[in-house]
Length: 280
Image (cartoon, rainbow, N blue to C red; front, top):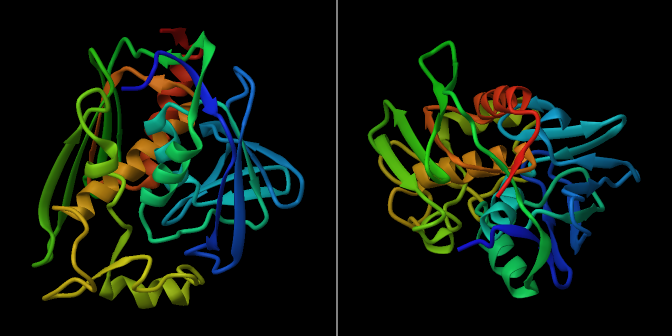
């Protein structure tokens, strides 16, 4: 269980690989930071990009952060792992524009950060405690809801009219569940029918069967790493996107067929309403 105090890294953690959307190589060095620093990206052009909802510039198959001319693609898997470990303060140095996809999951991020060690700091961690529900809706029935709750809790409902997917659900509570086993191994996925259009749009330039689960009409491109892997990956993304609140959240977060844009839209609604984070 995470400490109620702020946390940072005892020593640096290093990751290298290519970005799934840009196809560009990137080395990421995650370093410890002082209390109340937050999670901040040091972009490859020297700019600083706070990992907050007000830094989001676009969502297109991933979350994209920016500040001035600096941009950071696909931070959600790394942020998901950091949030799960209670790493509130860190400087994340980037040599390229996109966080490496690695194997498409958060497992490598989580294990390396855990091995680097979490240093518990002295100040209480910021906690957002919504006092009312928040909901955002998509144009095809997708939705994200935040409901006041006694603890941090995530639920995701995935539905595709597809023989290999159908309706899948998952619930995850950090206080009771095991992120390393239940969420972190789940890889990003795409329908075979989606892959070609993504390439035509200039996305998924670094995508391969080694870092993504491709869903065909009658099979997956590789054995599942965990039961109901697709919906678990969506929950992984949800945790990463809500980490952009720059605080922990004491609420139930429910997403139904949603993606990064609706995740961020709902987190932004909470951010704008609950401006001052309470302290645990």
